[in-house]
Image 1: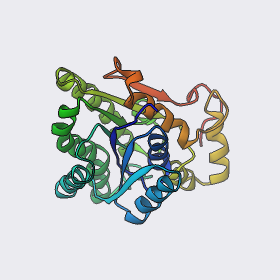
Image 2 (image 1 turned 180 degrees about the vertical axis):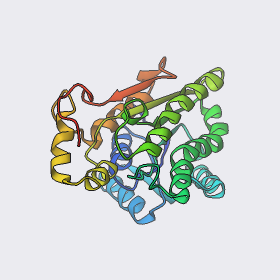
Image 3 (image 1 turned 120 degrees about the vertical axis):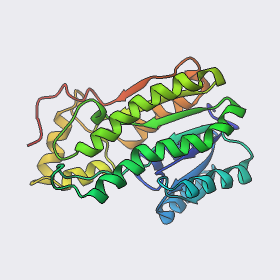
Image 4 (image 1 turned 45 degrees about the vertical axis):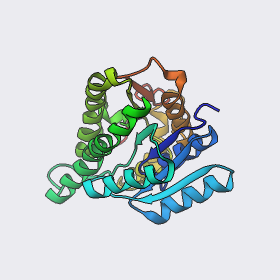
Length: 257
């Protein structure tokens, strides 16, 4: 098992990619702290892990709130004593152009996607220093390949790529590795919300698959397995890197309308 004896905090783990990452980490022996602002979703993910013989703790937290993040870390340490891995996955996506995006929507997206990555990293770092642990941030193909009506989301994901590299430089001397994953279209909540924002959701979904060299959108578990690799000793000399889990996104032929 690649993560046996490790304690991993995974945010945004109540569904989609976060849930799949939690399950993949648990399969590899990690004790997983399943974090989500939707506690019911976090509990369901934890239940699924326990039903498969794994160890999980569900925690409700808003990653945009410093006090909530501090409590998340406190509960993790109370339950498992240590933290070895932080996977910053929590995100929101506003499917609007800038003119139609409200001030509140813009600020919330920045606070969750980029601010949450900052806050969770900030409060976990003292514990990661003690274990010489690592951080995996969830960026996106939209960090370098932009699409219509997601300008704010693209901005946050580009920021996460830069933030990842900066943290890796700052904390490499502490033995802490920091990497990010850039998924393409993945069959999960955020992608589905984007499809539903199009004039013809079914056509948009079909067209999205054709944007990938593999001629399909990805599955959450396919992202989860890359996250396991980056969190494990198999990636012991990997830091400041962005891993594109895109199925060759941008190499296909059918652009979205």
